[in-house]
Image 1 (tube, rainbow, N blue to C red):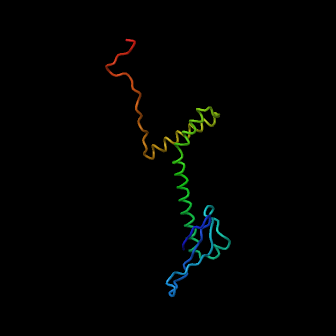
Image 2 (image 1 turned 30 degrees about the vertical axis):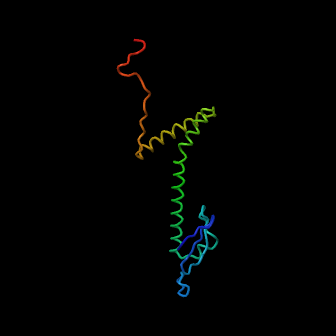
Image 3 (image 1 turned 180 degrees about the horizontal axis):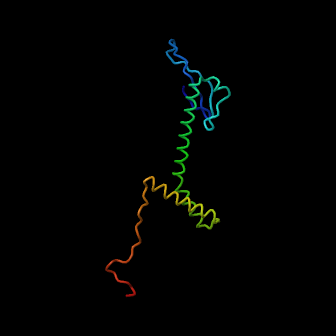
Length: 140
């Protein structure tokens, strides 16, 4: 079974045989499914054998896993920009309820934990320049 994307649909193609005269495979389109919802076209499942239905279900699961992975990667890619945007909004006086504040603090704690568990240590920051060891205080 093969799958060919065309716009928002994915065609389901079956290999029927080989045409010796044309020296080409014989492939038949038996239906399609929606690229985003995986809803099959009417009659598609009726045209497939149980093994082919299992293969189609496996393809749907593979596509769902890929979509979920892309979705989660998008969260990571947009996170820093969203946090900076929230900071700018707060600096500009955006309204924030106490519940929203608590939710944000909880989410930040979960993010710190998840990053630590994933092996991303918190970077050390350079401290502001303080008094040198041999430099006295102005008030001494």
